[in-house]
Amino acid sequence: MTSPAQIHAANKPRSRAVRSSVFFALATTLILIATACQPPVAPPAPPGEPAGNFAINCSFTHRLADDPIVKPGQAGASHSHDFFGNRSTNAATTLASLQAANTSCSDGQDRSGYWVPSLTVNGTLVNPTRVEAYYQGFGTEGQIKPFPTGLKLVAGDAMATSAQGEVTTWRCSTFDGSDFVSPPSCESSKLLTMVVRFPDCWDGVNLDSANHKSHLTNSFRTRAARGSCPTTHPVKVPRLRLAVQYPLSGPVNLTLASGGVFSGHADFFNAWNAGRLADRVCQQINHNVGCTVGNAVAAENDPAKGRSGDSVNLDTSVSDTTPTTTMPMPTTTTTVPPTTTTTVPSTTVSAASVQAFCKIEPTSGAV
Image 1 (cartoon, rainbow, N blue to C red):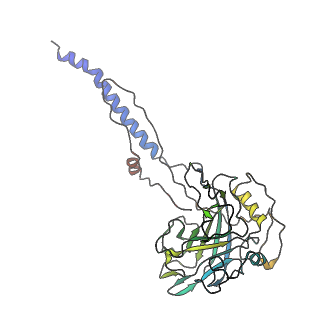
Image 2: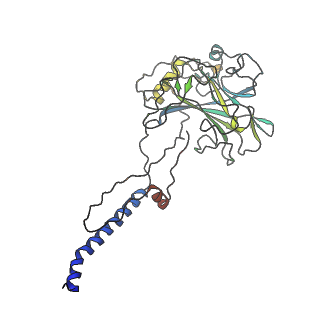
Protein backbone atom coordinates (compact mmCIF):
# COMPACT_ATOMS: atom_id res chain seq x y z
CA MET A 1 0.00 0.00 0.00
CA THR A 2 1.32 3.47 -0.95
CA SER A 3 1.93 5.75 2.01
CA PRO A 4 0.88 9.47 2.11
CA ALA A 5 4.56 10.44 2.06
CA GLN A 6 5.09 8.46 -1.14
CA ILE A 7 2.04 10.14 -2.76
CA HIS A 8 3.30 13.58 -1.74
CA ALA A 9 6.74 12.82 -3.12
CA ALA A 10 5.27 11.62 -6.42
CA ASN A 11 3.20 14.81 -6.82
CA LYS A 12 6.15 17.18 -6.23
CA PRO A 13 7.41 17.20 -9.84
CA ARG A 14 3.86 17.74 -11.13
CA SER A 15 3.29 20.66 -8.73
CA ARG A 16 6.53 22.27 -9.77
CA ALA A 17 5.57 21.85 -13.45
CA VAL A 18 2.18 23.46 -12.89
CA ARG A 19 3.66 26.38 -11.01
CA SER A 20 6.35 26.84 -13.65
CA SER A 21 3.86 26.76 -16.53
CA VAL A 22 1.45 29.18 -14.88
CA PHE A 23 4.31 31.55 -14.11
CA PHE A 24 5.52 31.36 -17.73
CA ALA A 25 2.03 32.11 -19.05
CA LEU A 26 1.61 35.08 -16.71
CA ALA A 27 5.03 36.48 -17.58
CA THR A 28 4.33 36.15 -21.31
CA THR A 29 1.02 38.01 -20.96
CA LEU A 30 2.68 40.83 -19.03
CA ILE A 31 5.41 41.11 -21.68
CA LEU A 32 2.79 41.37 -24.43
CA ILE A 33 0.93 44.14 -22.62
CA ALA A 34 4.12 46.00 -21.72
CA THR A 35 5.27 45.87 -25.34
CA ALA A 36 1.96 47.21 -26.63
CA CYS A 37 1.95 50.00 -24.06
CA GLN A 38 5.26 51.45 -25.26
CA PRO A 39 4.86 54.83 -26.99
CA PRO A 40 4.18 54.07 -30.66
CA VAL A 41 7.01 54.75 -33.07
CA ALA A 42 6.01 56.13 -36.44
CA PRO A 43 6.80 53.59 -39.15
CA PRO A 44 8.39 54.64 -42.44
CA ALA A 45 5.90 56.22 -44.85
CA PRO A 46 4.06 53.24 -46.36
CA PRO A 47 3.56 52.91 -50.12
CA GLY A 48 0.71 55.12 -51.24
CA GLU A 49 1.49 57.92 -48.81
CA PRO A 50 2.72 61.34 -50.04
CA ALA A 51 6.21 61.04 -51.52
CA GLY A 52 6.57 64.81 -51.57
CA ASN A 53 4.54 67.98 -51.96
CA PHE A 54 4.63 71.70 -52.41
CA ALA A 55 2.12 74.45 -51.73
CA ILE A 56 1.37 77.95 -52.92
CA ASN A 57 -0.88 80.74 -51.66
CA CYS A 58 -3.32 82.56 -53.94
CA SER A 59 -5.30 85.47 -52.57
CA PHE A 60 -8.97 86.13 -53.33
CA THR A 61 -9.26 88.26 -56.46
CA HIS A 62 -12.89 88.72 -57.51
CA ARG A 63 -16.43 87.34 -57.46
CA LEU A 64 -18.68 86.57 -60.45
CA ALA A 65 -21.70 84.45 -61.30
CA ASP A 66 -19.54 82.79 -63.97
CA ASP A 67 -18.05 79.33 -64.50
CA PRO A 68 -15.82 79.01 -67.60
CA ILE A 69 -15.64 75.21 -67.23
CA VAL A 70 -19.28 74.28 -66.56
CA LYS A 71 -20.92 77.22 -68.36
CA PRO A 72 -18.34 78.62 -70.79
CA GLY A 73 -19.31 81.79 -72.58
CA GLN A 74 -22.44 82.24 -70.46
CA ALA A 75 -21.80 85.32 -68.34
CA GLY A 76 -23.98 85.47 -65.22
CA ALA A 77 -25.47 82.00 -65.81
CA SER A 78 -23.86 80.27 -62.81
CA HIS A 79 -24.22 80.59 -59.08
CA SER A 80 -21.77 83.02 -57.50
CA HIS A 81 -18.12 81.93 -57.40
CA ASP A 82 -15.09 83.29 -55.56
CA PHE A 83 -11.96 83.33 -57.75
CA PHE A 84 -8.31 82.96 -56.77
CA GLY A 85 -5.06 83.08 -58.70
CA ASN A 86 -5.61 84.38 -62.23
CA ARG A 87 -7.14 87.85 -62.07
CA SER A 88 -8.92 87.64 -65.42
CA THR A 89 -11.03 84.50 -64.97
CA ASN A 90 -14.61 84.89 -66.23
CA ALA A 91 -17.14 83.13 -68.42
CA ALA A 92 -15.12 83.88 -71.58
CA THR A 93 -11.83 82.54 -70.19
CA THR A 94 -9.60 80.46 -72.43
CA LEU A 95 -6.13 79.01 -71.89
CA ALA A 96 -4.68 81.86 -73.95
CA SER A 97 -6.42 84.52 -71.88
CA LEU A 98 -5.17 82.95 -68.64
CA GLN A 99 -1.59 82.77 -69.93
CA ALA A 100 -1.72 86.45 -70.89
CA ALA A 101 -3.08 87.69 -67.54
CA ASN A 102 -1.55 88.28 -64.11
CA THR A 103 -1.94 86.22 -60.94
CA SER A 104 -2.37 86.60 -57.19
CA CYS A 105 -0.43 83.39 -56.49
CA SER A 106 2.86 83.32 -54.59
CA ASP A 107 4.48 81.64 -57.58
CA GLY A 108 4.12 84.12 -60.43
CA GLN A 109 4.35 81.37 -63.05
CA ASP A 110 1.12 79.80 -61.84
CA ARG A 111 -1.56 81.65 -63.77
CA SER A 112 -4.16 78.95 -63.21
CA GLY A 113 -7.72 79.76 -62.26
CA TYR A 114 -9.07 78.33 -59.00
CA TRP A 115 -12.66 78.95 -57.88
CA VAL A 116 -15.26 77.80 -55.35
CA PRO A 117 -18.89 78.70 -54.60
CA SER A 118 -19.32 81.92 -52.63
CA LEU A 119 -20.07 81.68 -48.90
CA THR A 120 -22.71 83.73 -47.06
CA VAL A 121 -23.44 84.31 -43.37
CA ASN A 122 -27.04 85.26 -42.66
CA GLY A 123 -27.36 86.15 -46.34
CA THR A 124 -24.27 88.39 -46.42
CA LEU A 125 -21.39 87.43 -48.71
CA VAL A 126 -18.08 86.74 -46.97
CA ASN A 127 -14.79 87.47 -48.72
CA PRO A 128 -12.37 84.56 -48.28
CA THR A 129 -8.79 85.49 -47.38
CA ARG A 130 -6.95 83.09 -49.67
CA VAL A 131 -6.69 79.57 -50.97
CA GLU A 132 -3.70 77.38 -50.19
CA ALA A 133 -3.16 74.98 -53.09
CA TYR A 134 -1.31 71.80 -52.15
CA TYR A 135 0.22 69.66 -54.87
CA GLN A 136 0.73 66.24 -53.26
CA GLY A 137 2.37 63.09 -54.56
CA PHE A 138 0.83 59.75 -53.65
CA GLY A 139 2.83 56.72 -54.66
CA THR A 140 6.43 56.00 -55.52
CA GLU A 141 8.94 58.78 -56.20
CA GLY A 142 9.41 59.16 -59.94
CA GLN A 143 5.81 58.20 -60.74
CA ILE A 144 4.22 61.65 -60.67
CA LYS A 145 3.82 63.67 -63.86
CA PRO A 146 2.85 67.37 -64.03
CA PHE A 147 -0.69 68.33 -65.00
CA PRO A 148 -1.04 68.89 -68.75
CA THR A 149 -1.37 72.52 -69.78
CA GLY A 150 -5.00 73.50 -70.29
CA LEU A 151 -6.44 70.77 -68.06
CA LYS A 152 -9.94 71.56 -66.75
CA LEU A 153 -11.28 69.76 -63.71
CA VAL A 154 -14.12 69.94 -61.18
CA ALA A 155 -14.00 68.20 -57.79
CA GLY A 156 -17.00 67.80 -55.51
CA ASP A 157 -20.73 67.83 -56.18
CA ALA A 158 -22.56 71.17 -56.34
CA MET A 159 -25.87 69.31 -55.94
CA ALA A 160 -24.88 67.32 -52.83
CA THR A 161 -27.27 67.41 -49.88
CA SER A 162 -25.23 65.09 -47.64
CA ALA A 163 -21.57 64.63 -46.73
CA GLN A 164 -19.23 63.93 -49.66
CA GLY A 165 -16.74 61.79 -47.77
CA GLU A 166 -13.14 62.95 -48.06
CA VAL A 167 -13.76 64.98 -51.25
CA THR A 168 -15.08 68.06 -49.43
CA THR A 169 -14.59 68.68 -45.71
CA TRP A 170 -14.29 71.55 -43.25
CA ARG A 171 -11.51 72.39 -40.78
CA CYS A 172 -10.39 74.96 -38.27
CA SER A 173 -7.37 76.46 -40.05
CA THR A 174 -5.34 74.83 -42.82
CA PHE A 175 -2.94 72.89 -40.61
CA ASP A 176 -5.55 71.40 -38.25
CA GLY A 177 -5.80 67.75 -39.28
CA SER A 178 -9.32 67.25 -37.92
CA ASP A 179 -11.89 67.08 -40.72
CA PHE A 180 -15.62 67.72 -40.28
CA VAL A 181 -18.50 67.06 -42.67
CA SER A 182 -20.00 70.46 -41.85
CA PRO A 183 -18.48 73.73 -40.63
CA PRO A 184 -17.22 73.36 -37.03
CA SER A 185 -17.10 76.01 -34.34
CA CYS A 186 -13.48 77.16 -34.25
CA GLU A 187 -11.35 78.98 -31.72
CA SER A 188 -11.01 82.68 -32.40
CA SER A 189 -7.33 82.19 -33.30
CA LYS A 190 -8.18 79.80 -36.14
CA LEU A 191 -9.85 80.38 -39.47
CA LEU A 192 -12.75 78.36 -40.81
CA THR A 193 -11.45 76.40 -43.83
CA MET A 194 -13.17 74.47 -46.60
CA VAL A 195 -11.03 71.68 -48.10
CA VAL A 196 -11.65 70.18 -51.56
CA ARG A 197 -9.57 67.26 -52.86
CA PHE A 198 -9.05 66.44 -56.54
CA PRO A 199 -8.31 62.99 -58.05
CA ASP A 200 -4.76 62.05 -59.08
CA CYS A 201 -4.98 59.69 -62.10
CA TRP A 202 -5.43 61.11 -65.61
CA ASP A 203 -6.57 59.19 -68.71
CA GLY A 204 -3.59 60.63 -70.59
CA VAL A 205 -5.72 61.94 -73.46
CA ASN A 206 -8.49 64.37 -72.53
CA LEU A 207 -8.13 67.86 -71.06
CA ASP A 208 -11.83 67.89 -70.21
CA SER A 209 -14.87 65.58 -70.26
CA ALA A 210 -18.63 65.91 -70.48
CA ASN A 211 -19.07 66.03 -66.70
CA HIS A 212 -15.66 67.73 -66.18
CA LYS A 213 -14.63 64.86 -63.88
CA SER A 214 -14.42 61.47 -65.61
CA HIS A 215 -11.10 62.14 -67.39
CA LEU A 216 -9.50 61.77 -63.95
CA THR A 217 -10.07 59.32 -61.13
CA ASN A 218 -8.55 58.45 -57.75
CA SER A 219 -5.54 56.20 -57.35
CA PHE A 220 -5.71 52.99 -55.32
CA ARG A 221 -4.91 53.87 -51.71
CA THR A 222 -4.05 50.43 -50.29
CA ARG A 223 -0.50 49.60 -49.25
CA ALA A 224 -0.31 46.75 -51.71
CA ALA A 225 -1.40 48.94 -54.63
CA ARG A 226 1.27 51.56 -53.81
CA GLY A 227 -1.02 54.40 -54.89
CA SER A 228 -1.08 53.10 -58.46
CA CYS A 229 -3.58 54.15 -61.11
CA PRO A 230 -6.15 51.99 -62.91
CA THR A 231 -5.44 51.05 -66.52
CA THR A 232 -8.23 53.35 -67.68
CA HIS A 233 -6.40 56.35 -66.17
CA PRO A 234 -2.72 55.35 -66.24
CA VAL A 235 -1.01 58.73 -65.79
CA LYS A 236 -0.18 59.64 -62.19
CA VAL A 237 -0.49 63.37 -61.50
CA PRO A 238 -0.32 65.38 -58.28
CA ARG A 239 -3.27 65.22 -55.95
CA LEU A 240 -4.42 68.83 -55.78
CA ARG A 241 -5.96 69.90 -52.48
CA LEU A 242 -7.48 73.36 -52.09
CA ALA A 243 -7.90 74.84 -48.61
CA VAL A 244 -10.06 77.98 -48.73
CA GLN A 245 -9.78 80.16 -45.64
CA TYR A 246 -12.53 82.46 -44.34
CA PRO A 247 -12.26 85.18 -41.65
CA LEU A 248 -14.79 83.30 -39.52
CA SER A 249 -14.67 81.14 -36.41
CA GLY A 250 -18.25 79.90 -36.03
CA PRO A 251 -20.76 78.09 -38.27
CA VAL A 252 -23.65 80.54 -37.76
CA ASN A 253 -26.15 80.30 -40.64
CA LEU A 254 -23.54 79.51 -43.29
CA THR A 255 -24.67 78.80 -46.83
CA LEU A 256 -22.79 78.17 -50.06
CA ALA A 257 -24.08 79.76 -53.26
CA SER A 258 -24.48 76.28 -54.74
CA GLY A 259 -26.75 75.17 -51.88
CA GLY A 260 -26.14 73.98 -48.31
CA VAL A 261 -22.78 73.45 -46.65
CA PHE A 262 -22.57 69.92 -48.12
CA SER A 263 -22.46 71.27 -51.69
CA GLY A 264 -18.82 72.35 -51.53
CA HIS A 265 -16.84 71.92 -54.75
CA ALA A 266 -13.98 73.53 -56.64
CA ASP A 267 -12.79 74.14 -60.21
CA PHE A 268 -9.23 74.11 -61.56
CA PHE A 269 -8.12 75.42 -64.98
CA ASN A 270 -4.40 74.73 -65.36
CA ALA A 271 -2.39 77.62 -66.79
CA TRP A 272 0.98 76.99 -65.12
CA ASN A 273 4.11 77.68 -67.06
CA ALA A 274 4.66 74.07 -68.16
CA GLY A 275 8.39 74.02 -67.49
CA ARG A 276 8.02 75.61 -64.08
CA LEU A 277 5.40 73.08 -63.00
CA ALA A 278 7.54 70.22 -64.34
CA ASP A 279 10.49 71.47 -62.26
CA ARG A 280 8.47 71.75 -59.07
CA VAL A 281 6.94 68.30 -59.51
CA CYS A 282 10.39 66.85 -60.23
CA GLN A 283 12.22 68.48 -57.33
CA GLN A 284 9.59 68.72 -54.61
CA ILE A 285 7.34 65.71 -55.31
CA ASN A 286 9.57 63.17 -57.09
CA HIS A 287 12.71 64.32 -55.27
CA ASN A 288 14.61 64.32 -58.57
CA VAL A 289 13.89 60.63 -59.18
CA GLY A 290 13.22 59.81 -62.83
CA CYS A 291 13.30 63.45 -63.95
CA THR A 292 15.58 66.45 -64.30
CA VAL A 293 15.23 70.04 -63.10
CA GLY A 294 15.81 72.88 -65.53
CA ASN A 295 12.70 72.92 -67.68
CA ALA A 296 11.34 76.31 -66.68
CA VAL A 297 11.75 79.29 -68.96
CA ALA A 298 13.59 82.34 -67.66
CA ALA A 299 11.64 84.49 -65.22
CA GLU A 300 9.69 87.21 -66.95
CA ASN A 301 10.21 89.71 -64.11
CA ASP A 302 7.02 91.49 -65.06
CA PRO A 303 5.58 93.16 -61.90
CA ALA A 304 2.16 93.38 -63.53
CA LYS A 305 2.00 89.60 -63.67
CA GLY A 306 2.84 88.93 -60.05
CA ARG A 307 5.97 87.35 -58.64
CA SER A 308 8.01 85.28 -61.05
CA GLY A 309 10.82 82.88 -60.38
CA ASP A 310 13.11 80.48 -62.17
CA SER A 311 13.64 76.76 -61.73
CA VAL A 312 16.21 77.23 -58.98
CA ASN A 313 14.44 79.73 -56.75
CA LEU A 314 11.57 77.40 -55.84
CA ASP A 315 8.88 78.76 -53.56
CA THR A 316 9.06 76.84 -50.28
CA SER A 317 7.37 79.42 -48.08
CA VAL A 318 4.45 77.09 -47.45
CA SER A 319 4.82 73.43 -46.60
CA ASP A 320 2.19 70.79 -45.97
CA THR A 321 2.38 69.38 -42.46
CA THR A 322 -1.02 67.79 -42.16
CA PRO A 323 -0.61 64.11 -43.22
CA THR A 324 -1.41 61.72 -40.41
CA THR A 325 -0.36 58.12 -40.06
CA THR A 326 -2.33 55.25 -38.60
CA MET A 327 -0.16 53.47 -36.07
CA PRO A 328 -0.47 49.67 -36.24
CA MET A 329 -0.64 47.73 -32.98
CA PRO A 330 2.60 45.83 -32.25
CA THR A 331 2.31 42.13 -33.05
CA THR A 332 4.15 39.54 -30.98
CA THR A 333 3.97 35.78 -31.42
CA THR A 334 4.98 33.63 -28.46
CA THR A 335 5.30 29.84 -28.54
CA VAL A 336 4.76 28.09 -25.17
CA PRO A 337 6.86 24.93 -24.72
CA PRO A 338 4.56 21.87 -24.64
CA THR A 339 4.19 19.81 -21.49
CA THR A 340 2.87 16.29 -21.08
CA THR A 341 1.63 16.74 -17.55
CA THR A 342 0.03 20.16 -17.46
CA THR A 343 -2.45 22.12 -19.57
CA VAL A 344 -1.01 25.60 -19.85
CA PRO A 345 -3.47 28.53 -19.74
CA SER A 346 -3.81 30.41 -23.03
CA THR A 347 -1.46 33.38 -23.49
CA THR A 348 -3.37 34.91 -26.41
CA VAL A 349 -4.08 38.61 -25.78
CA SER A 350 -6.52 40.31 -28.14
CA ALA A 351 -5.70 43.70 -29.65
CA ALA A 352 -8.95 45.05 -28.25
CA SER A 353 -8.09 44.09 -24.68
CA VAL A 354 -4.58 45.52 -24.97
CA GLN A 355 -5.95 48.78 -26.39
CA ALA A 356 -8.45 48.99 -23.55
CA PHE A 357 -5.71 48.32 -20.99
CA CYS A 358 -3.32 50.87 -22.52
CA LYS A 359 -6.05 53.31 -23.59
CA ILE A 360 -4.64 53.39 -27.11
CA GLU A 361 -6.85 54.89 -29.78
CA PRO A 362 -5.63 54.37 -33.35
CA THR A 363 -5.74 57.60 -35.32
CA SER A 364 -6.81 58.22 -38.89
CA GLY A 365 -7.58 61.19 -41.05
CA ALA A 366 -7.99 62.44 -44.58
CA VAL A 367 -5.23 64.55 -46.00
